[in-house]
Length: 422
Image: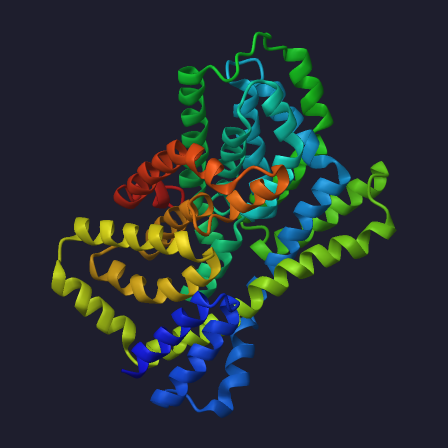
């Protein structure tokens, strides 16, 4: 009863538009008072321990790297290189836009930052080429979903912290599924383009132009190369690779004259704002999850779920449905901290590898960025262009279908996640 009342209080406060970390914090305090799972005198210590992690330092560093890339103009070089690679194809600029989202995802680890950066650069050109504005917004929003799926991803850092799994291992495992989602968005755009005739590029591929774009983008490409190469080779931890990436990006920007000392306060403020949103949620959500574990709620949840069906296929579809619905109503961070401890035991019960479960979870939760009512990327693109959110959401339906199909594929083909680890 106390658990039900605690969770009910959280839901009531959320319905009243109370900020998530406040609602969850008050619900956790009510839960502690009702059950005595932990003495309230330990509340401050438990909150501090929830965010006292070396791995979390990577979050503001990846956000800062992305901001430096945009302010220095290096992000534009990445998109120019993507356009030189695929721009001559039919629906070429749409494909370039999605590839640009993928490149930026390798730097920022954030969907919203990806959508904002690429949207500012590409929206005007997409509309000029014949894409309706709502569809162009949906394309960028869907491509930006790779920000949470392609390593380095803030979501995998948090999930690794919650479940005690190396975030470097999760980054390696997420590489193929992340690229599959990127290709899924590309293919969906090509199909929609053929059906509706949005864009028809007539130019030819120029190897000379491609080499010139590659040369101009060499420093921009070096940043994701440092991040992913350092992590995958084992030279850097994710946090160390983020620090090195920030240093290199700042050095390149200052040498090229596109970053000045007076730009530093604004960039640091951007990173601090993002961190200030994420860390309070992590702190209270970790305490909430710890309380539920002490009260054996995850174990009771597993027993209840497996009593309904013991079929692994059915349980995977149940987990998929939970992830998709949860992603529609809450941001990724609280979903991870709340759902991972509950559903991880279910995955173990059906013999699912824990790394495979993590990749399946994040891939499925990624849908929430383009599905209302939460749909963070939809809000970002609406804010950038003034396009109604529901108009963008309707045009995003084909991309949602493609991402659901890929989530199912990731869930039922473990090799897609585990092959790179072996």
